[in-house]
Length: 71
Image (tube, rainbow, N blue to C red; front, side, top):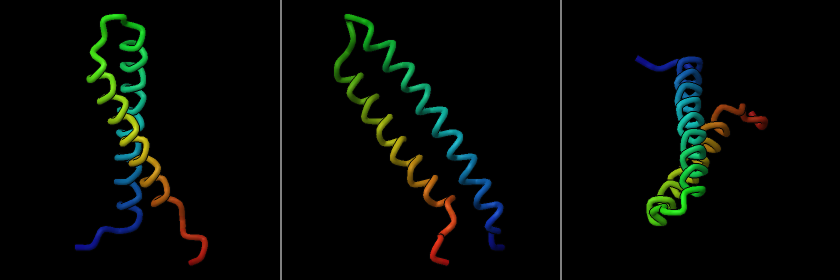
């Protein structure tokens, strides 16, 4: 059974919403950790790297949702 374009778009939008929420949560965690003087630098770097990977994934998903103008 093939997945319709509408169902595929809905799935992408759902994943996009999840990733945006995780990105925002990581931003809040990173901000609060950066304010703490006794932070674990390695953990902070890992969180920043994860946040960047999520941002890249969000950009890829958003580009998939944009209709191809050359079609």
